[in-house]
Length: 547
Image (tube, rainbow, N blue to C red):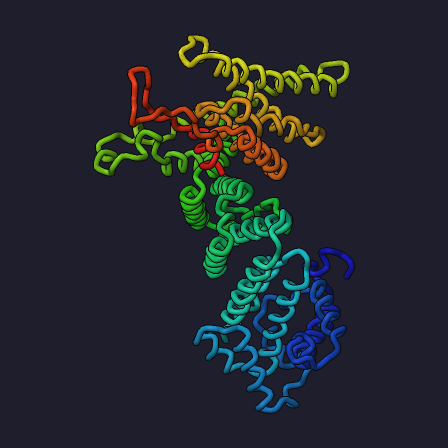
């Protein structure tokens, strides 16, 4: 039982029967519930510990006879159960599951062995969810895929579905009570991916249930919608499904391994038309998820889409369905550009899509990422050719950091009407994008550690050059960093918060002091020029929109 995979490994029939008998005794004797305090606390704690490692209570074979044999193999004989005890057991199960009326009628027909089995499944998996440090909700889908349960004609499958639905609500409550941490976010993303996998299950009932659970998960934790990992996984999964549309009908349909840590797989349908329908449904679901995410977090989603297209561009020479859907969504769900955003609907209706949408900004930023990824890759190759590669990378880092400061100083020292101003701004633009590309390249290499001074340089870039056009470029770089380096988000936020406080200390933008000499409008003179002097708040406005 010390093995971390003991609960999901197939167990010998005798050992599995031993655990089944244990859980039947536990639910009947009340070892699973602490509410009544009938037994010592140590007993309850021991049952919880056993639940974490206990194997699933699925049936050994796929025959309906296994369910009928429960009455003969049950650890507790039905003959010794009174009608009052049977009625009490039914009421307890109804109270715990809160099922719909059709399930109530099914449960009322069941005899003692079936009721004890259902209650054992409920309490085992509930205690497993509550006691295990790592959530294991994916195990519940094994009960839904149990062939013996699916073949039963007495409503067993509907009862198991009711148990799974109830346990999913408990799972959501457990996750909501956990403190916000990277581990919790990883668990949520894992379960979102599992639900996406089960959405492609050959069983239609499991598909509908997975879709329902995914909607409930997003309703409870909306940020899952714009998760980078969930987006990338769904698009890659779509491509895997699409690549298996054309199969030899004379061989057995393969199983797709999606590379998930829980070992989730997708069983393909036998006919091409069924496989095409699954791909069509999943593509539509992915598109709906992306559309909803674009409404809530458009900038974050666009940045993730850029990163996905940038990473998968090498595969674009072949057909890649995930890449195609990402490009389609970018064009379909494009927002209005800055000039059209404030216009009334009658004016927008008369303008073509290419004039009012901001797709050009999306692809411009995408090309910037690709360009500077290539430039920085070449710089790092030259640095690694040095006799001491580490020293070569340090020299490159120092040079790029110095370029940011030099370019910012050149811009601030010029007048707006200076003909050299566009060239100076272009140098600053080039320097911050190279810094960003260097961070992304070094972070993607597991052998390299990104120096903290690089994060400080890109986060404090607004302080060095506080103007709107520079701030727009800086925000694009920040979006790239957050999409390409999600594991370094905390480091970036620390440096960015420090930069914000520095703008306050330096009295920049929103924090700039009011001008003292505004003149006296009651006694103006010919030499006095009365005009408003508002603070330069546009950079802070762009910054706040990013937040």
